[in-house]
View (spheres, each protein chain N blue to C red):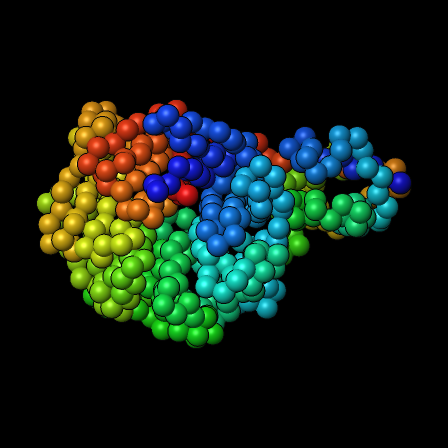
Amino acid sequence: MPADILLLATRKGLLTLHRANGGWRVADTAFPGVPVTSVLHDVRDGAIYAGLKHGHFGAKMHRSDDGGRAWREIAMPAFPPGAAGAPSLFQVWTLVAGGEAGELWAGAIPAGLFRSGNRGESWDFVSALWDVPARARWLGGGYDDAGIHSISPDPRDHRRVVVSISCGGVWETDDAGASWIQRGAGLFAAYAPPESANDPAIQDPHRVARCAAAPDTMWMQHHNGIFRSTDAGATWTQLELPGDDFGFAVAAHPGDPATAWFVPAIKDELRIPRDGALAVTRTRDGGRTFETLRDGLPQRDAYDLVYRHGLDVDATGTRLAMGSTTGALWTSDDAGERWTLVNAHLPPIYAVQLI
Amino acid sequence: MAQVRFTSWLRTLVPDEAIEAEGATVGDALAHVFATRPQVRGYVLDDRGALRKHVCVFADGARLPREAAMAHPIRHDSMLYVMQALSGG
């Protein structure tokens, strides 16, 4: 069954949309007025987690155990006083379910990784990643500090986790975070001085997504192109696109390692759709060719940009949802062939999740 | 005892009326408030225990410099306001 609930983390709260009679309606708004920087529906127990950024009053974490009706503030990840530099945590950028019961991973700005073994009641700081010497070369990408936006446990062995950092490249642990190896061979940074372009520790992977059924296949929207890995992130190959290959979001088909979706924009200094026409690019042959999908998307005067977590595909691989910084939301029921505008008047959208 | 009032932005956590607090400094008085309302602490102080960057404290009508606010001495009848910067959209 395709997903029929949609969670939106927005600048003005967490919106829950329900699908009924062929359309989507906002059924509930939690934390009205408060920026929600990350959201996770944990399929294992139905819990929903929301990372909030109160601005003046700091980042906070909440959990709902009844489908989003009642919320409780839970423990917030924090850098311990002993952590080098011991920064204040700016925001939680991504929340991911782990493999063990109650296990969660949180990625933050600054680029701290945190693990909970008890559904967010407490958090352990993963110091081994923070302490890698290469962290001295990490830098902020769009924020003051580097941040962790993609955390990908291997479904075959949950102790193996691939973490992606803007801008700190790709890192892998095979012991649940106790030790880390820099990955990302094949990535290059066109924006860096030539002698540093191949340094894996300065790469800016904007977003990394893994095929659930074929976990060795990973897709990356990088700052300067689209890359694919078939060895679980160890090596990457850049893919040739007919049009723009800049963007932030990527969605990997859960069952087909040859299919993925991206949302292109004019690169770097502009970050808007080319000619004001929003498109989704899709490959169904492992990245050899790409289709540009426009049906149902605005084709003039559009300034929509889709952020890292703003594109999602459901477990069937047919229903997609896409939310923009302009506050527009579209869904597709046919793998992106046609899109339907749900609402063009929402707050800026940071993350979407189909459940 | 000193009186502490909080910005309406924190109304879900603290009441509108003044809260009585003991202490020789702003930091002492806030700690006194947090002792009975621990959920407020993380909204006023950051995870290092410092006054949050965009939170400011007024004592007896004067805005305190952020770096010196916590150590600022207060009287037994001081009136403190915990406010926030106004910015954003």
